[in-house]
Length: 109
Image 1 (cartoon, rainbow, N blue to C red):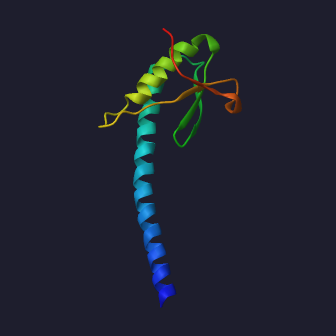
Image 2 (image 1 turned 135 degrees about the vertical axis):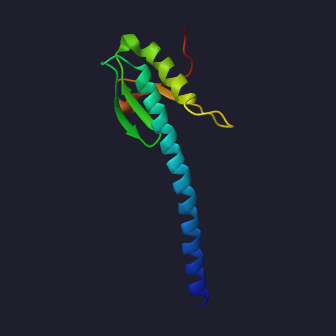
């Protein structure tokens, strides 16, 4: 009898976690999609491409001479794509390949 109760509790708790997690992940995906659309509208150059989107991470291929300008566009549009009661913060990284990217702390004008 105890084992049956344990399994019932375990599966019920797992279902509740999945229901909450699905809502959060769906909302995060909607925010990311809206941000991508806004950024794409602002990036009119054909040599700037979104090459990878995994969960909440976007990887753009950007020419080095346009990097500062594109960083500002991406940061602004991603942080302001939706108005919430809490701010959205974007962590930006740059590098020659995904494995060697380093975080950008400040952007000089």
